[in-house]
Length: 104
Image (cartoon, rainbow, N blue to C red; front, side, top):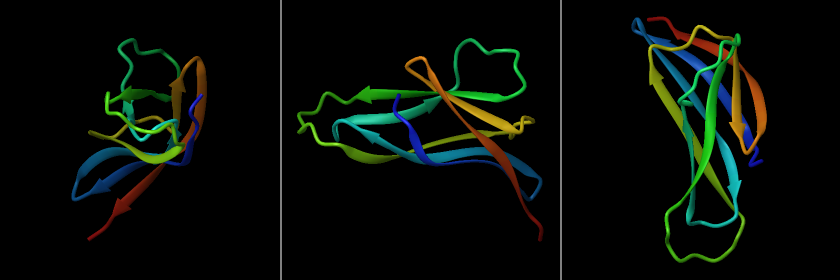
């Protein structure tokens, strides 16, 4: 599994708007590979948020060099769950979802 380092998941609340944000760093095998977080097509009934990590090959000619890349995900409306699970290649990684609220 490609592990996401420095994984952070937050419910960002500002001016009455809720946004669910996730970001971290993924080490990929080539600069031509782009990590992307997506919502799974089939949702589970567990008590946590789930995203899939997909590694997309851009098709560009690039050397096989381990490369660190930033991966992000944003969704309007926030999430009601307190835990995030990221799945990739049959493995999973979890982190707590924090809430950050800006008060004017």
